[in-house]
Image (tube, rainbow, N blue to C red; front, side, top):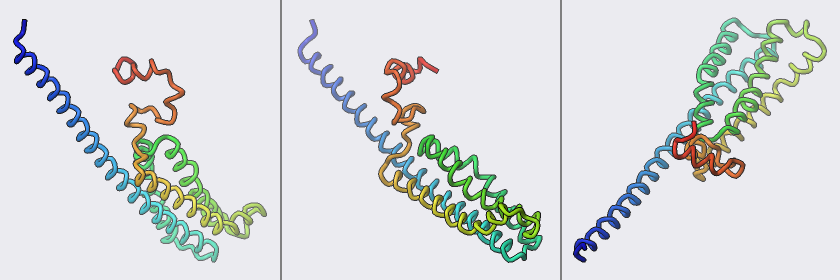
Length: 203
């Protein structure tokens, strides 16, 4: 039979180990949280700058098309802005998906990107065909381009504000925290399946 002192020593050692592991886990979570907060902040700042640049370039191009004074240099400047935007498009989609979730990534593509792109497409068509050669429907679209751009700007800034608020409220990284399972969908998933995912027993 173990001496009482040895038994007490084992208990103390076990409790100490448990407390140390819990402390380490807490510190690790705080470290990850801080790192993800900084990454989210950087993503929002980069996206805001990219959106500002793309909308400004689109606004200048639409204005030049409206007055019928689009030079080759102006057209090239607009095309360069589009290429730069598309160069970073997949980067922003992946960052948004990882830190803000699938629904926000979809909003970025189908709302923010599409609304800006549609205005540029209208102006490009007018530049290519000329105002006098547009159909009645296309003329109305060109006349409405500035309003559509204002709407696109509002949609983009509202989206960025939502990401900023999620970051401030620490509502980010839900996907990564749950092994790529959206936290909002946990109740719809078998608990057995989740346990298997957590234990790496399920691909």
